[in-house]
Length: 354
Image 1 (cartoon, rainbow, N blue to C red):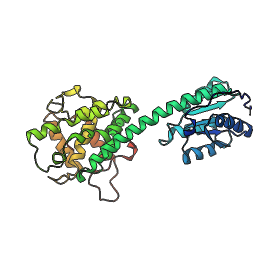
Image 2 (cartoon, rainbow, N blue to C red):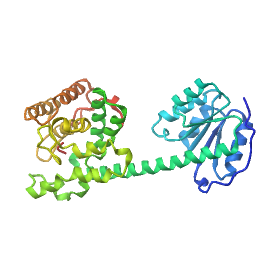
Image 3 (cartoon, helix red, strand yellow):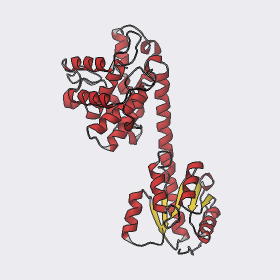
Image 4 (tube, one colour):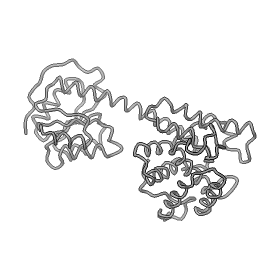
């Protein structure tokens, strides 16, 4: 395997001590040289001798960036990169393929595996450090975005936890929505938006007093006016996140009805985004098929029949209700027999009137 030979000099990276970098190469001299270059800049370095060992490190330690040699025994850099990028817990780690290969097909293969960048051997110190700094800077931005999403999800789940009758509601909406979206052929980007929206769709209820949220009887006109504001508040809370651009319309419009009698904007028919109609469909079903203070849960068949009656009133999307019913018929029943609602198809994965 071709050795790395260029050392050079550079100024230290100011925030390097917070970053841990994986160097994977089956040639000891290459590992040692990359390690020396990076440690001189203040980075912490973990080394691996092959692809399998690299994956063990990534799964067991906090890694901020991975430098993978392409031609390694047991598991190539391509395979290791693909594994890193396909696992939810590691897919955001930047991966740089370090290679002596110059064939365009090899580059294409690396891109298809999810590689973020390439370095040719012999590696030049300045180029190495410039790429490392750039990718680590991007990783910090990504981490900040993830942290913001985590805070939003935690807030949404804390709101759900205040009402014992809505336990698990957000998780079910995420799974059902994704399953239904995939069934009707929506893009993966919109499926991700629905997974997120399932969790945060009611985050605006943080502005609704608890005595209104938990009131067992009908709301007064003033209370209903406050309740109707929660989709707008939720949209406003989530709007700073650019990654939520497809989520925002779902949050705002998941209480609209096809005949225009919904809220907050009174949209009609196709004015309501399809993604919002998907979430509304599963939201209504989940509300009907779970226990509430004022009634017991309906069976799946009863819930669907109720929705079909409401379709005739002009409220819901008939095609989506039909597809949801087919999903429910295809889903395996809960083995425990204790569930309060039909189980969604597990293939949906991660990730109304509630």
